[in-house]
Length: 317
Ligand SMILES: Nc1ncnc2c1ncn2[C@@H]1O[C@H](COP(=O)(O)OP(=O)(O)OP(=O)(O)O)[C@@H](O)[C@H]1O
Ligand SMILES: [Mg+2]
Image 1 (spheres, rainbow, N blue to C red):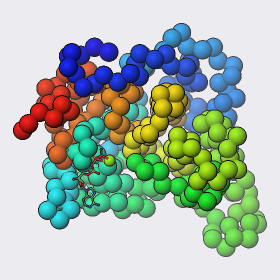
Image 2 (image 1 turned 180 degrees about the vertical axis):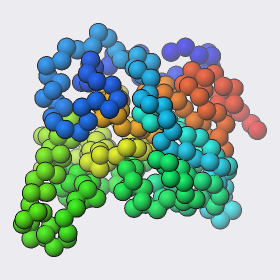
Image 3 (image 1 turned 90 degrees about the vertical axis):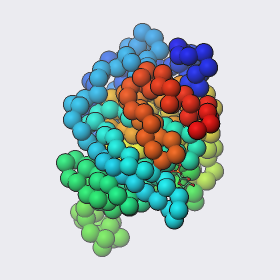
């Protein structure tokens, strides 16, 4: 990839041919939505002409602001994890949050989904402004996430873990769910159908009955993504979804992320250390360093920014 000779953004992802994306040629953001089996639909489609990267895709849908972070600061005792950070996420885009270790990226996601309450600042999601989110408000409002370290029920099957992601969507009361009768039974059948769609979409039907703890790490990450998708989120927060994966697994995960964004119109905020992946997938990138925002722009703008290059190369400040 291009860039200064000593650029830290020398990920290998772009050089590798992607397998054809399943959704290519179909609708862009806001397409067929969550109904139907995507894997089955994909069979009939011709493969795309060549490797597909973010720059080949249509601009992010809508463009209106879905999430706005204003002046957010967060401290842990004397440690300033975030200092007056502001940025927004437009509906339909893939927004990357990058920065060196300890820059505050995970803390930012934790603020967005209500795990941490900022000391200062405002969060506006879908037009509603709050000083802080609460986790249940974030989840009910349509924010789902995956974690830097996989957080699944290791003893439970893949299917049950993904079903757990749908509990928020279940409307019948606890009593009916326990007896699995009447409205709860009909509802559970509908939810199972959705979950099966997601399992097909992420190509994991062969492991659906296996306890998650027995799966290799790369597949656990995919199951965690499936569980987040089961919430049918408007905003999906992904904390290093490709950490610990080999090249092939990274390519697969990149393809799923693009497909989710294009086929379901899901807005995605993504933390990732592999700069090749970030540059290929994201519409815009916000860069944090020592808890402060140091750059914000398109992948091309950000990778040429001297402050960003210095931060990654560890130039003494
Ligand atoms: N729960 C916590 N208690 C105390 N300090 C914390 C806590 N969470 C984060 N920090 C501190 O806040 C800073 C930002 O951490 P954070 O995990 O957000 O960074 P990050 O950018 O996600 O890093 P990495 O790339 O290593 O995952 C670090 O100095 C970290 O030690
Ligand atoms: Mg982190």
